[in-house]
Image 1 (cartoon, rainbow, N blue to C red):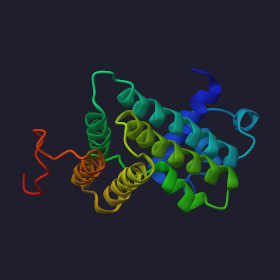
Image 2: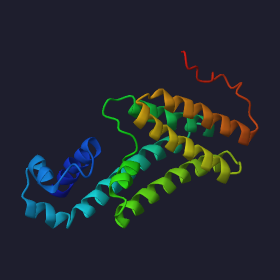
Image 3: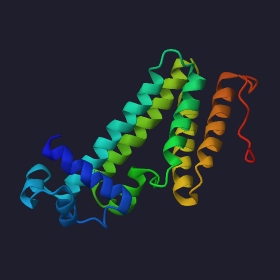
Image 4: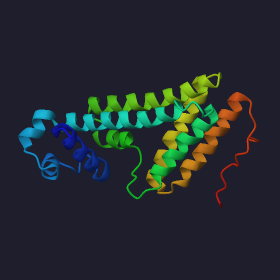
Length: 197
């Protein structure tokens, strides 16, 4: 692993787990076991480091989402379900703190660099849902907006309530959006989420 990647991995884990403002450069230097000059050679400021952390996470999340949408054997409805089910798997972990981009903007919203990466990520997620609806040959804009809002809402709800089941509720809402947009009924064999199940 390159030094820059090592620093970024170390910093990213700390930022997500403990918060951006709570983690100073000295802490990152200690945890990564590198000289401060080495860190600044790769990342001129903490702002650059935070933006790089978000950019790396952005690419990783998009890769995971595109793996779902590029699976030829999955129908569009099944792709939507799988996106939320994979989010549920992540959320069902004690380390899960919610959306890294929302957390970063809440803490570091005075940085145009950070806000820009966060906005790019949110737009990219909506584009994933747009592409799914386009593949279903249905109007994309309103349905994609609804689905991405459900995705964001699930992230926020789990972060506050610590109940990953919220993601499954969001999944069922997203599937209802899909069914309404495509004229399907929920008689496809999948039972709606039961809170008591």
